[in-house]
Image 1 (tube, rainbow, N blue to C red):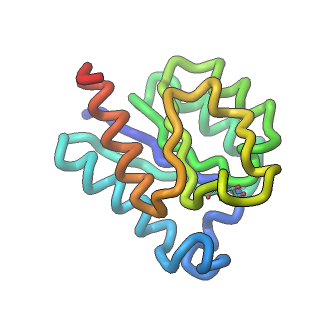
Image 2: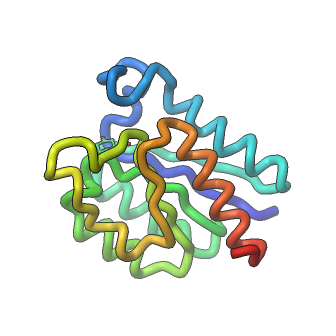
Image 3: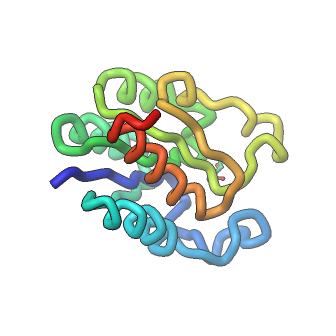
Length: 147
Ligand code: DQA
């Protein structure tokens, strides 16, 4: 059975309570559910992992090699700072889709730049939790060779 990993970075465990004007009222479980529904329809399993710690996210990316067909990754604040996460993504063959719930380009200028986007397969920004579903669809369709 093919598997995808939904990986979430710092503070995303607080979704639903955290700045609802920006991130909405949906929870992290809701986000994972959207990705899982789309994957299940295609016979693909979804695992999830969230950490507030950069090194743990790096470990999860390294360990994804050989285990997952793709990673849906919201790196949260580390998007804008982390060379370590970028190097981890570059070190594996597994395709990564970067997701942001909010439209980072409408926000502070420090959120406009992603350290990770150049080494990801693609980026989905600004569609709320739906971005997790769109990322699952994009990964699965590209795995099936439709892109
Ligand atoms: C975020 C955007 C980041 O700039 C921010 O640090 C987050 C969430 C998003 O999903 O919109 O924590 O990744």
